Amino acid sequence: MDNIPLISSPLSEAWPSWLMLCLLLCLVVASVQQPETIRMSFRTTFSRMERIYGDSAVNIWGAIALVVFRLGVIAMTLYLACYEQGHFSILTYFLIILIVLAFVALKSVIAWLLSYVFELKGNTNFYMPQYSNIWTAFCIVLYPFLLIMINIGNTAVMRWMLLAVAILFCIDVIVKLVQHYYSGLNSLPYIALYALTLEIIPMTAMVIGVQRLI
Image (cartoon, rainbow, N blue to C red):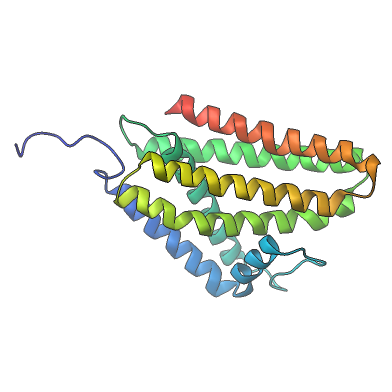
């Protein structure tokens, strides 16, 4: 019996737990280096902001740690949400991170192009930092769900809970989008185009790409 190999899964592999510990350390570093970041991220998420909140001086190490935390959490969320069975590989996880990075890069480029086309650069300059704050709060909320799925079980119930959190996040993003860009009926085409090209289509493509990879 001792020679029977364990089936590869989040429960049998050691690297997911170590990875989650490293991500937690990144969040701690970000919190220490930029003490206001976490509080302002949640404040941005759950209220309408009239100005950009956050630390007056961005610490480079804190910013890097926060980016690593967000990338790591989103990649693990996609992996666990799409994973059914088979080898649970750290190599696959890093490939998913590349997919997420491609999503972020493409989204940023298109966002700035749209802002110039519709002459809404000022709105975009104000919206993007708050959008980043929403992602930070979203990843912090996701973190305990990932710990449960890695150490207790990647069940269908937990995946549905992840989906529910993701839907709430998307609703919040749409609300913030309308708050920042709505200036009358003539702004609705831009809002619809933004939501479609920068939220719905890219996220759908990202999930499909991860599913095919796994």
